[in-house]
Amino acid sequence: MPIISLPNAYLQRLTGADIETIIKRLPMIGSDIERILPEQVDVEFFPCRPDLFSTEGVARAMQGFLNLVTGEEEFQTTPGTISFSVDPNIALIRPYIGSAVIRNVSLDNEAILSLMGVQEALHWVVGRGRAKVAIGVHDLDTVRPPFRYFGAQKTRSFIPLDFNEEMTLEQICNDHPKGRMYAHIVADKPLMPLIEDADGQVLSFPPIINGELTRVTEKTHNLLLDVTGTDLPSVTTAVQILCTSLITAGGTCEEVQIDGTIWPDLSSKERMISVSECNSLLGLDLSAADMAEILRRMRYDAKPAEDDTVLVSVPCYRSDIMHDWDIFEDVCIGYGYDQIVPKLPLTSTIGEEHPVMQMASGVRSIMTGMGFSEVMPFSLTNERIMYDRMQRERDTRALSVLHPISEEQTMIRTDLLPVLMEMLQLNKKRELPQRLFMIGDVVCDQCTYQKVAGVCIQPGADFSLAYATADGLMRELGLSYTVRESYDPAFIPGRSADLLVDEREAGGFGEIHPGVLNAFDLDQPVAAVELDLRVLFI
Image (tube, rainbow, N blue to C red):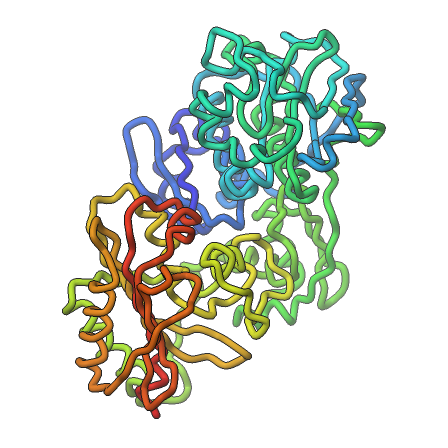
């Protein structure tokens, strides 16, 4: 989850409350304070609230929560003359672009840091590391409209941000720090996305780097936003959050035409919610008027419509509101978690440990006894991790998420080994050796059961190490087993084996294939073992 740095003086100025009060109440809106420093407070927010990734967004929310300013903030746009043209060739590279002009901004150092912070947080949460959405913020007064978004040859050159010499797009991908980080997003494209002005000056090379020409400084008063990406709703969300944050900071928003379409759309959307349904879910007894008042504190416009309904106006920046229950959650936050009186249940029961948990505890002791450290990744993953990077065929029996909100979480895991390989990738900067294991549920053919898997990455990790680990695990579990040669493409041929219990395949072990290591960006050999724990209940 993103950690946002909130400058104390800037936050107090925008909110209209002292920093001690703000810090005391911040956790009640759904945040976790990481650290309190003399000049700033670092706060962790859930990814579902990208509107809180800026100091301006937090100040807006806190104004309502502290009952200083209630109701929806108005976000007006004025007609403008600035336009973009979009080259049809860009459709196969990075097809979508959104924009806006923000005028009359006053950017001190804290405001610039806040702008950079929300930009990077949106890159990570909404943009998926810039692959889905990338944001450019430019000093409008250094360039001349109209602007052009097109596909350029790799030999095109300009001066990238933080450099003082021209570089070609290919050189930027290879030599610029941001190029080395993000070039993989466009490296396989025949053309590179580029934004230039009427004089052919380059503003941005999305999703890699802006041009030095349009660097934003404390002297900047007029901003041009460009948001490019591969998903139109995500591009729209990023534009709306940036525009509303900058309006809250004191700027005015001017419309931009992109091939005849007006950007941005900052209008709100109305929903009718049920008071009785909300009360039933939360265990409260609120009237329609009470609920409307609470929602106004949460920065909605809301008013009772009938005896059992409230008409709610949802601000454009609240991209997380997809269901009435999302609004019910805000009712609970506005009411105050600390105001809910805990009650003892009316029934009394005596619990005991489930046999599956007893089994898992025993397996956990065995793996830790062999020097492995446990990790607990999410159950949701995606087909690229589970199958493609493992060089395995996709399993049609896998349980997919019907309406995924993220490309990273589209299915429930069917194996544990791919998830462990991803963990090794995430920890590749840690010292070696690393010996990780996990035990948990997998779902295949709508059946939930448990597996255990372990990996060891170190110089010299080989088939012998995997065999020794598998043998130790099976021996400690009291299982008689035999082995046979494995043809699992995730392992090196001739250096892997299947585990058989009562002539039934129960798992496997071996040395991970170099192609899999490359897919997970690992540069050391990995020995691995995985076991289906249903064999303990045969």
